[in-house]
Image 1 (cartoon, rainbow, N blue to C red):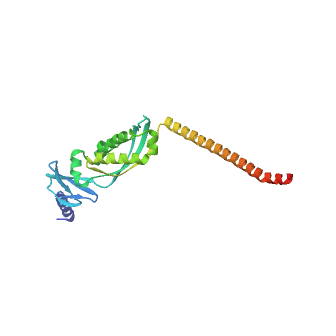
Image 2 (spheres, helix red, strand yellow):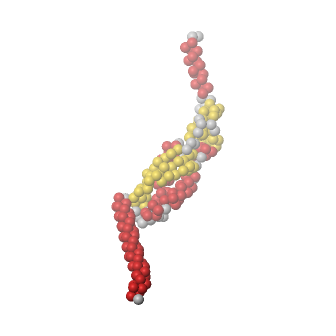
Length: 225
């Protein structure tokens, strides 16, 4: 038997043997299925013995993943709010079998669960605040989104690691109105400052004149006498 035949037989043997093993890589969990039916057991990282044809394994990443989402909502005073969100999330490792059975793999989780959830949460939270409050209470708004979204995604075996409101902006008309208001307020403050300054300067002149008169009166009396 020549070397080529031996090599071919070896490759064939290894291929057959490999069907008896499933490898779950670092940062993954294996969803075990018997004839396509998801089992309760979740496979940890490593090599696992399986029965070919009967058993199959689907690996899911349980590492932290980042999803960037842009969504539109309305404020309490009916202003359009456009928000860019950065969400860090991961599949709950011990529930990997449940999420695969109920939803699917990572792309399906993003499309069917995460994106719609973020949009709905933003709409619900933004509706509680006026446009100005969304700007002035951004930390509170962010905390509300974080809390609401964490509870929402927990029902789908997804954990939220962090969420950032990267950018929150409004329609051009509202932005122009806010800018005009800020300019007007600055002008009012400037006018108040100048008025106060003028009053202070007038008071200083009056005080100086009074002091001068007080000093001159004794001198004039002495001159007359």
